[in-house]
Length: 208
Image (cartoon, rainbow, N blue to C red; front, top):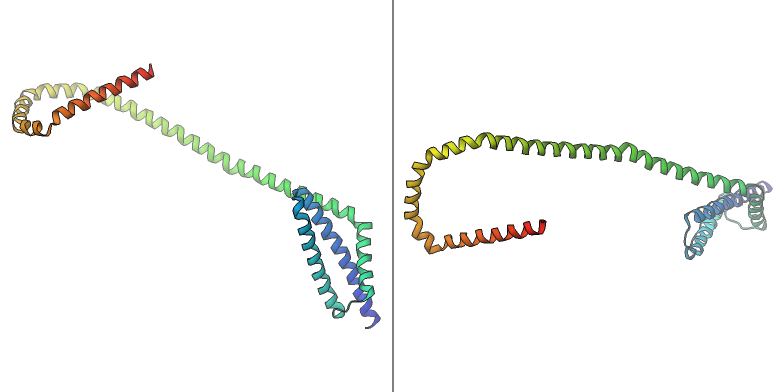
């Protein structure tokens, strides 16, 4: 293996060590911010080291066809040491800033959604409720007016038709009277009327 390949491999391992430090610090800060359960920390640590080993092996394969030499470990250790000596505090601060930025964006998005979507929908809903209540009140008011206007005509019409309706009612009673007596509809109607009056009195007592 030539000296140039060895230097390139060592430089790649140095960068790999720095990258491992960056990812580890980022993972540590994120796990602290998310307050992950301590039982999961060993699992995530194991996954991190498995992923780091696979990445380093791929980098090593791309540079010297996967040959493991002493300078490979020296390059990794130098990269990790250089990172924690120079870049660790900066990376931790940057990760904290990134997390706070994401949180601020989420809070802003939630507030914007409430302001631009939820509150207008609530305003429209309340406005529709007011309009619907107004139309119901207007309908009841107009219906009362119509009833009051029609009532005299209805009384006059009933008075005019009374001489005609009485003989007709007598004839209907003669025709259907025996049938009603057989079916006991009159007694049932009377019992239903009495029951309705009792329920109405009971409801009025409870209201009072």
